[in-house]
Length: 335
Image (cartoon, rainbow, N blue to C red; front, side, top):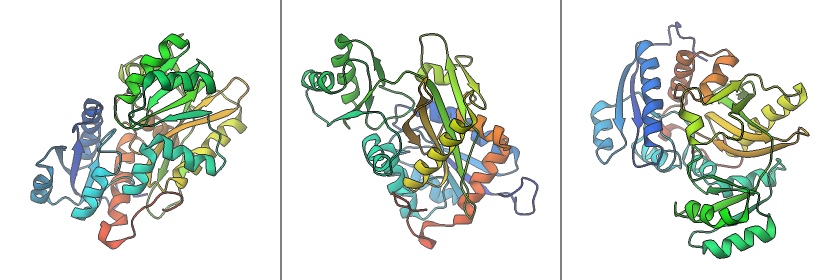
């Protein structure tokens, strides 16, 4: 990791990608503002670019040393932008094409997790175009009425519905399928909402951050509002769980990160049931960097303040080099 005040911490020409057509565009812009402010304070020259049709020309004009895609959801987090940056041969922060795509596709990621024996909730995959009424009957028959319905390729809990009675199931499925990429329905697990960040800098061993427990108001959960509204959730670090459970959560977060072939950073989300059994939900390749986001809190507890974290991520990308100088990142164990 490059210390902030080391001779290597020279001024860099940095590009930040933000916004775009994603349903999470506003969250991306909020994250990008924090990232840009931190990197500017470190003395770097930072230019923010909206993810739009002219972004290729804008990057060609700037010729950045490193591109930081501060993007959430497709097309910024599903491998599309990563492929674009590979073709243009820019150094960039974060995972590559295949790994990003695998992590963004909840169904595909769960196949990889299940093959490795990681603990998962029972689920049912709904392909695009499936009739919501028929799907609801399938879900009731296999999983019952207490389920969580998710779009297959979205983040920030967008389109996610907790269902506790049969009448609410079909509308929830209809909403999730509206994303166009199918849906994933999982058995509803009561328990603590938990997250674990991973940092994986070029040339260093990946490490898990301290475990964070997310607490929301009674009867609520960590939905879109509670993720981004100031004061709507509490982050307990380390999570109030037995030490062995926290160690297991960190181990699973590292396994998920490496199974997907991720690099630089990730954050895995879990439910821990009252009996301390663990369920892995998903892994995020470009976790939020807003003032209420979990990943920076985990980094701070790990010993990296926000500026140091940004410096480390940028220098990891710089150390890795341009795509033309190294092998492509792939899923299922690539690094």
